[in-house]
Image (cartoon, rainbow over all chains, first blue to last red):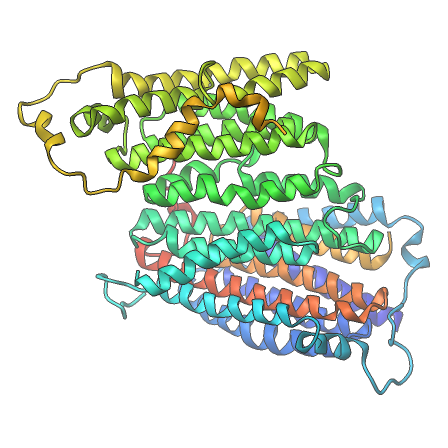
Amino acid sequence: MVYFIFITFFCLVGGLAVVACNPSPYFGAAGLVLSSVAACTVVVEFGGSFVSLILFLIYLGGMLVVFAYSVALASDPFPEGIWDMSVGAYFTGYLVFLVGFLAVFGGDSFFYNFGVIGSEASGFNVVRGDFEGVSLLYGLGGAGLVICGWGLLLTLFVVLELTRGMSRGGLRVI
Amino acid sequence: MSPTIYMIILSTLATGTIITMTSYHWLMAWVGLELNTLAIIPIISTMHHPRSTEAATKYFLTQAAASALILFSSMTNAWNTGSWDITQPLTSPSHILLTMALAMKLGLAPLHFWLPEVIQGSTMTTAFIITTWQKIAPMSLIFLTMNNLSTSVFLLMGLLSSLVGGWGGLNQTQTRKIMAYSSIAHLGWMATISSIMTNILIMNLLIYLIMTTSVFLSLIISKSKTIQDTTSTWTLSPTLTIIMLLSLLSLGGLPPLTGFIPKWLIMEELILQNFNLLISMMAMSSLLSLYFYLRLTYTTALTLSPNTTQTKFKWRFYPNTSTMFIITPATISIFLLPMTPLILL
Amino acid sequence: MTPTNLLMYSTFSLSIFGLSMHRSHLVSALLCIEGMMLALFITSATLLSTTQTTSLAATPIILLTFSACEAGTGLALLVATARTHGNDHLQNLNLLQC
């Protein structure tokens, strides 16, 4: 189990390093998909299976699909992967940064504290804690739900207003 | 933009700031900042031309990064201390991160590069909103977390922003960019005092808001986009030239006017705390700001530029912008100095 | 520093370095912002199970909602930039420089 967690941590950080090292957007979107799948696994390992499901459905299923679609806007004739010179240099630099970060701040406690310390990570539970917590949005945290709904409605107006092409033609070829 | 959508967006802009100001939990403060950012984006890009789209993009990228940094610093703090309260003390890496993020939201000196460009790309009214209303939410967060932020970082940033605000504005001919650099310089003075005495910070913020309102309203009325445009202010309204001259000198901080109060009190407080070198450098850098304010007043009120016969009859027409709102801010930004003992709480 | 702390610090710092250092496309800058939101999500989701405060479980949901709002606005800005500037290279956003 510990090695499995280590692999997911590695995938998460590695995927974000691919996003950060400025490749073509195709590879960036692929790296973000990899790291968000790893993030779902990490959250499950920490005992938040419902929150992980939300992350999987909304973030990976909804938003990243839209992102992968939008990457088509930035169609490079010669996409740069991490094997190219500048991107590879950045990638190596970030890996060196990560290893240094690990060496300075990891310390002795790195393998000592390793393991799953979540509330319901071990054993079988009928009622999930995070499920109860999310249901607070329908009760005491109702104001949060109202604000979230208002934010989404506002985003609809904002997006429509930003992409409205007044005199420039609504359906121009982008 | 349709009036209904405009009303919804403007009310959300106000609501976001108010949520941030009244929140007790870091998540709600972040939500307020996000609502605020989302609402100002379509206002910036109302005109749909390339410059306004570019300004909206730059504003979005910087503000999204800064608010994510604010939430990250508070979340790591919650990891270490278990507390989500805004007013609780912050642990070691979080308070530096929070200081940087708030400085990025405000546009303090090492992180100021977005401010002149965003203001240049938007309309005069939007620039007015960005330099006044958008400063309130981060300033209230600074006010709430005053004891926990990094004092040395703020002193350094304050000095640097007043220098950058002075030097950056010297070479500009666009009034909006001049106002952006003036905003950076004033925020530098506020950042300097923010970690030492917060009641002076609040008073400085109020006086800055009122003075900027007065100058921006007179620029809006006279439709002055560049320094060159201010030369024909006298043909529109001779009274406006006097108001603009006094408001600009007040913004520069000359003694009989309101703008002198915060500079005076900040200098007094910092000398009391033995920051002699810092405050003398800041006073010198405010002379740089005063130079470009003086240049604006020179073209506005002190010279009569070459003109044709018809230009001087412009004042006979009824002005099509409302001049009513300038009365109160102009009066306050000119005459408030004798009231200093009353407004300093 | 526990490995979980190390994970969240390294993910967030990677994303914000990537955003601030060298970007050629606007869409990849937006991907970096999404990476920051992912790091914040992991931080808050592991916080609630580590400290066993289940009432914090609404935090990741609210966070995810507003990151969706941000992503939508960012993509709308991408479309607007592609319309006005022709492509989404960040080098082309140079009309307002001093």
